[in-house]
Image (cartoon, rainbow, N blue to C red; front, top):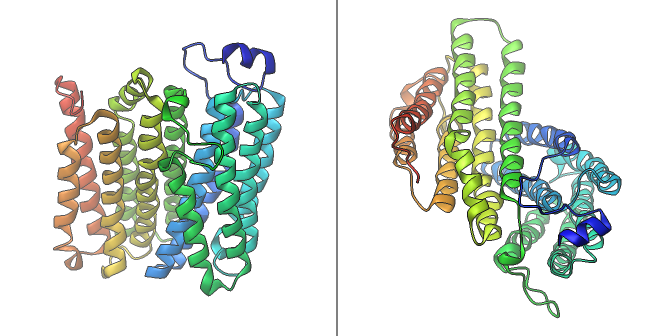
Length: 393
């Protein structure tokens, strides 16, 4: 593969070292700062079961668009002018896709679907072209392209039908998109992919996913700061703001513990890094990102009414967001290290027990109690690591 990369220039050279994340990839991520903000605002404005389901589906689509671009840049030479032009095109389509998120299940459905399909099919076709001298990589992305063409037809049809039917069409499209890696992208005439064919560079994948977590946490700070700026500085508002900030720090602390680097090394040392990366990063990070977004919504509501009454939806986001984050981080550690960290199980249990007293608390009080559960996990793991007893090998 190395000789082909040198000859063609569009593919990264695999020299056994860490594939550096390029500045153009960081620039590319700015589009998804906008996307995550749009998703959180959509959930804030539609806190119903249907609104939650629709927001979850849109999150899955946004994550899939970003994640597949990350897989592509793991193989592409991002310093090449052609690759940069492709990424700028994906960015433009990403802005259109993100801007249509709030009304994707209403008047901007076709715009969202067209932008999403253009991102997925266009970028994948570019990789097929870039890898035309690397048979294994070309065939892998050709299979992916076929799957995106099939799902793309459902996405576009869903954008054309009445909003009442859109949920079913897009649900089927998402099912195809997410089943692809599990089915090894089996395609008639092309066979199926093998995870051993995906010579993924684990350090690059870990760094890119870590940056997306930073994006989500940054959006949480943005929502918190904007809401705090629009309220009087009462004790309840200040306390709720402090809780939201500490929650964001605790989530960063839990995710970027010493085990983040250990996970990267574990993938790099694996005899099947493609399989580990597919499970640990492609799938296991979804509840992590969703948990951060839901927690940001809870922080916004706690700031808006810190001394009010905790209703069901407020309790669900204030407790469910951190629980979803911890569940995602637990799944990530289990897929990489093969163990279930007790600290995160305890954190989830604490959040579950807090539901018993949730409706006797104010939003500010419940926010601090949920923050305390996250701090227990963060401190527990830090102390265990410093004492030479890391919760994972």
